[in-house]
Image (cartoon, rainbow, N blue to C red; front, side):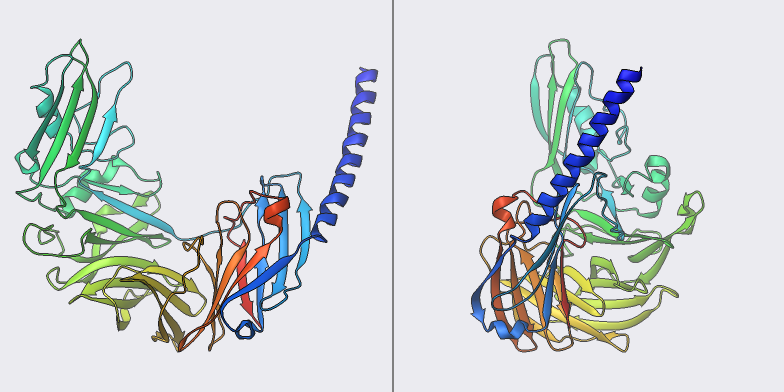
Length: 441
């Protein structure tokens, strides 16, 4: 026992010494960091006063912090730190909510057993409208793979509903949701069903897919402290003909609120807080404002995208703003700036600063296009007269970035910034919430 303790003490001393030497080597790495700017458009002087901060990590233990002034000849200051404990991201964001309406496109397999075709949900509560498959299975012989095209309305009058709150809510209230959101199945909607049986006659695989591009409904919303805010739309964004019918929803079409109680959602108190005419307006998407005081509701009306701002305290609208597009936007926010990216013939940026509680359109411009850039989640900063956006060149394993600056007339500068850590420390993790940040002085 005494020898074991002595050996353990020696190993502890050696590991501490190794860590100290390793930390010294890591700190020395920071002195070797360089960032090289290449001007691609405009004048780098347009970025004067802009600070870029990088904070990638490696394997949840090694973190880099690089800060430099944007523009020509950046002089980065870098600190590299190793943590014995796994690093954690402090990001806390708004939870999204998805409502599955239908469950028509699915694939189900069973290994060593049979695919269950006696109910419209699996063990997790996800919807799969299986009656057509169960019917086709009655005509499928042992050892046969059979495919048929059938009308879904022959099996269901209304769509099945499932609300996904990241596993905190399941099939318990599914009947109540389906009773409130009564959405009829279109009479001409067809599905192609394939059923596979083994030689013993057991169904081991089922596939179901819609035959054509018939419009299907979706539900999307936010899960906030007050409860769930939910809107319903159609994937093609249009109404009429054989499109989805929202006219039989109990309280009509609109934006819905499901209050949160101590034991979960109170499905008996679903409320349509912003009624809409489904023939004139269609839900597009919903966001919480950056300060958490408002809901940002996007609808499509007369082929125009409309922003409606609702106060979260009283759920009343405080602003309605028509936007110069009809496309579904990608939405980003930073303090008092709302930035939308829309795709028409080419990507466009719509920048809407908020002043005295109201948004206004400040910029409508084509988005500068780089090569090999991750456009999904840029960093942004607005100083009242200049908008800066930064994108990683390759989000998965690089921290080199591209930067653009716009004024109210459009692009004033575009440049790339090559970070040499991509060479001597590849595969850095740049998914952290503060991995890339911009700040005007």
